[in-house]
Amino acid sequence: MQLQAHDDNNMMDTMHAMMAEMEAMEMTHDPDIDFAAMMIMHHQGAVNIKS
Image (cartoon, rainbow, N blue to C red; front, side, top):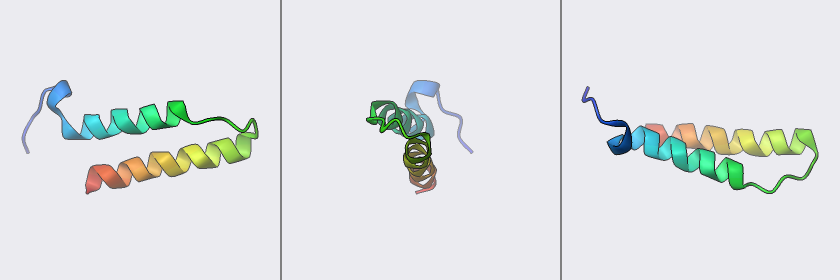
C-alpha cells in the first residue's frame, strides 16, 4: 500500500469526478427517477475506482 497526498490520490480524483457528474445532473423532479440516476452514477464511480 502506498500513501498518497489527497490531491495526488487516484481514488479521490475518481470520487471528485463522480460527485461533479452527480451535481451537474439535470433533475427530473421525480425523486424516484433522480435517486436511481444518481445511484447509477455513484455505483459506476465505485466500479471506476476498482478498475
